[in-house]
Length: 312
Image (cartoon, rainbow, N blue to C red; front, side, top):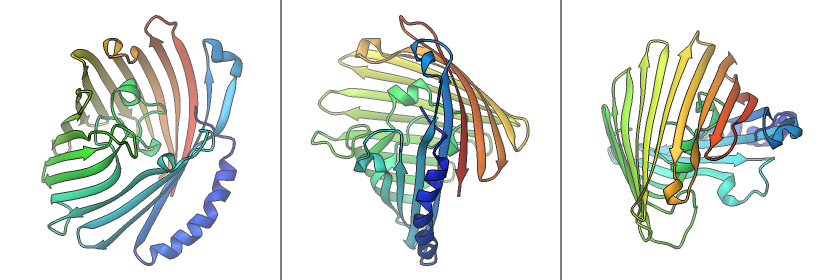
């Protein structure tokens, strides 16, 4: 779980890096990032004796540069103080070069490296999330990161990408490549609808995911449906989420999701989540969440969390 108590330490650790980053920015390097901290607790189940857990979940430093027209070089570095041993794959969330052959930001592009997987409706970084926790589809049914070669095309409302990569969430794997793609159609200010898929050679494992975000005034609706296939067995999942913005500073999210991977050896269960989000200013945001999980054949587990995020 995420933690809050060491935010001061994380800030001190970032100071030397930021000092060098300011000097680098003058030569064309943009630096951004965030500190994600929280406290969490369990209201039911055996974890209730643990009471409250504090700590820092994530400190991220992002470096981006455009040394030539159409070329972007980016590296996102993550540190997880409470997450156990840190290796190169955990430390480097993204590291890629992206080149648009037209020299701008649309048309045909080529991306090489490690990227956040362009699959599903939920984001990886907490600054982009509409609640504290990730849903079951994000946790069990879709990749978080992919390392490989990505060919893309962007024009107006249409965005498409094809890739050949390592297995899900593996920086390097001596195996047959994983093929995939995503097609997204933008609905102007209303939102988008998208189709993503991956296919793993050798195991013949197929995943198909449909996601959509639709905005109606102060209400944003998120929908995702997922199907997986392994050895002719089917796994299915679905997510529905609604966010209502009371103002520019306050909003609330309700989410329900269900996943059945029992026939493919994975997770089966459902969860319901309620969250209240607030913004002190553009660089200081937070969330309060209560979540109930019902794994198949087990009792309902209820957890709660308070999260604070400072970005720069």
